[in-house]
Amino acid sequence: MTGNRHQKLGIKQTIQMHWMDRTVQLILSGMNEKQIRSELDQFLSTQKQSGGVGERGQKTYGMAIGILSSWFSPDPELVSFRDDALRVAQTYPSSQWFPLHWAIISASYPFWYNVAKQVGRLLNLQDRITQAQVFGRMKEQYGDRGTVSRNARYTVRSFVAWGALNDSETKGCYEKAAPVSVVDPNIAILMVESVLHATPDARGAMALLLNNPAFFPFQLPVLSGDFIAKCSDRLDVVRYGLDDELLKLKQK
Image (cartoon, rainbow, N blue to C red; front, side):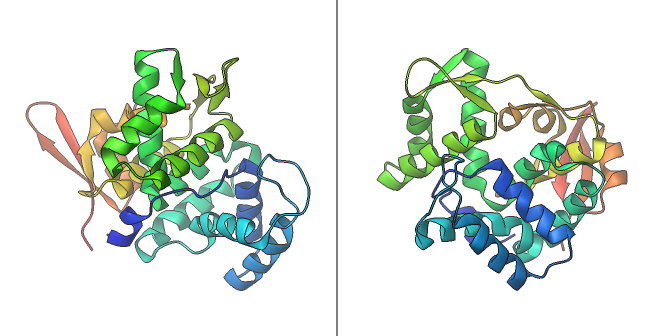
């Protein structure tokens, strides 16, 4: 597991869903990394963070390409995981890639995963949450730095842009959107695996993984550890107690 990945602070601008879709489409078309970067450079130069069209500074959309590279240039330990996500993406229209994007970016940027987990925890307690509540929890985890709040704000705004959260009538206050049902077990397994990649010890109790608050935008199917282990050559299941299962990444 790459320590540098866990030290990445997070998202330096709002990421739009259709940017992620475009990236996957370019990969599936057979383009190599250099070609993809060139195409995205041209594409993002006209894409505003708000989702509209207009000129943007190169530094700004360069940051976006850095995030999008989680699909086309993943860290070495995530290549196999990414490849499986691409195989699944080929079988669905781009309108159904939302959970795959969530899994890929969570595995590549644990900061994203941790913001999602804190948002999910808050939504388990109340119907509406505020930026201040999310920022406060992230500062407890990462320290009281301005960059933590700034990156958390971009991440939360990305959640809104993706339809995972809804703006409320009060500025800086958000409501949970209707959850997306994940029916395909292959997608659910990739989502569970993404948590293990985003977690330093790369393991977790099966029940807690399936009900992870970081999956607040989704409804996952019921899966057993045995089923997951049979479907993935990267995951191991360990039993403890009477009925408890621990899922972990295989050591390479």
